[in-house]
Length: 149
Image (cartoon, rainbow, N blue to C red; front, side):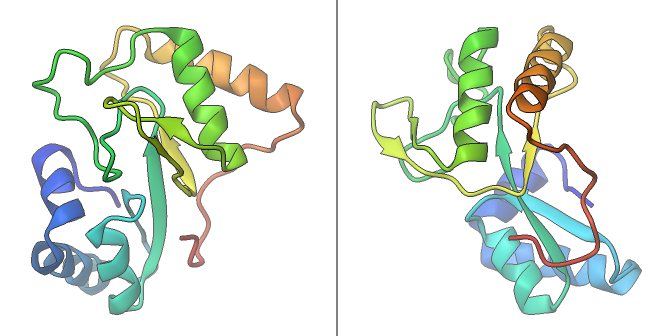
């Protein structure tokens, strides 16, 4: 289960809100995997609630030095270049640092990667990432019912 949009971003920063979301997921179906921004409050809240969590990183979004996403209102929030998106996705997978919008290097440990389906480049990014992963012998699989993050 993954909150969308503003709820996702707010729950990544606000532990009280994140705890409410995690409790709702637990009450609805405790076997679901709660997906949240890597190192965000939603991951912490899910763990504290005793539910399965998956830390997520974004292939097609730029990051700030604190590990949060650059707001979409910023002109450079989205990654439009296929090679840049591929490089960022591979960095997440290999545990390599990425460069933030303000030129800092940060490392993000993620269990799952997101490519926004509403992007004009989504299919290109997904195909390039899949091709690179297969070439490197990296297996793509569905999230499973266990704590991932």
